[in-house]
Length: 170
Picture 1: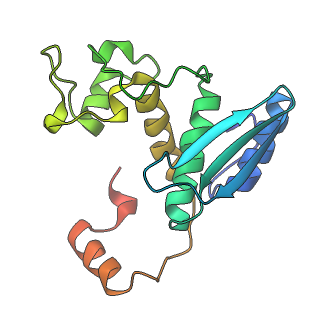
Picture 2: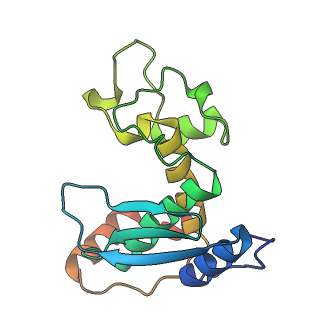
């Protein structure tokens, strides 16, 4: 972030613009009406431009998180075809950029028995690449100042009452 001369609060479009310039190719953010049973974000591109398509049929907060998750793949240099949503990490030690202890704290430990999965189901976060991208996106979200979304009304108030201020979760 220092190399991009960015400080909180983070403007997501400015971040994308400066990150693209830093890499020597444009980075376009494109809202898309993605199927509800598909990925929330997709990254692609060529030697001249990268494109992040993100679900437009969700809240702005979720859109920003999706964009940051996809940018994290680029920041970490993840190979474009390396994301295998059926991968099960046999060991938290396969996750190299963030300590295994931090991953366990955030997402819970990866099961020790081969074939066993967290909560009886598999998730994309069993893949170290997805874990890394999600962790980076979550950390970067702390830099983002979002408008208060009021469309949820009473539901939002109940959630805030139950969960407290998200700014103190970290």
